[in-house]
Image (cartoon, rainbow, N blue to C red; front, side, top):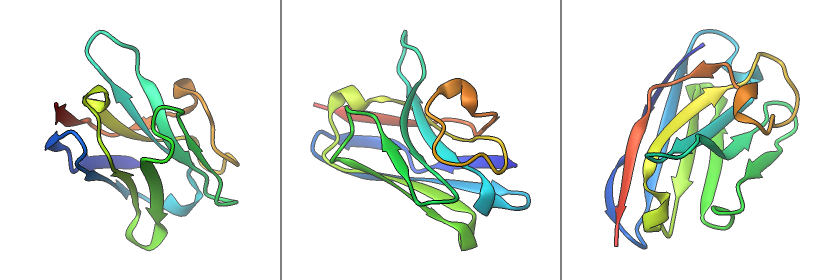
Length: 125
């Protein structure tokens, strides 16, 4: 599966953005999907994830209540709705897919094997 992320940009604190990740290839509906971010000098971290099989989701504590991950299998797209953005959300955001058919939401970066290119999100104070 190949992934193409978009939707990043510059926004003021308190604003919102919606990131999109479009997949190409077959059987998108059976891949667990995740959004990750990496700020300069920091490790890549998982922000949100969504399963393919049971509707379960995962959110990092730092984004709970502000971000939402959704998937539209008919459009082969996963979204990250980001509300009430903070300067500390500034990072390059990546979407990724875990191996085909893995149930639930894998919780670690190393579990994801297909990666899109990043999209930059900058939140000004």
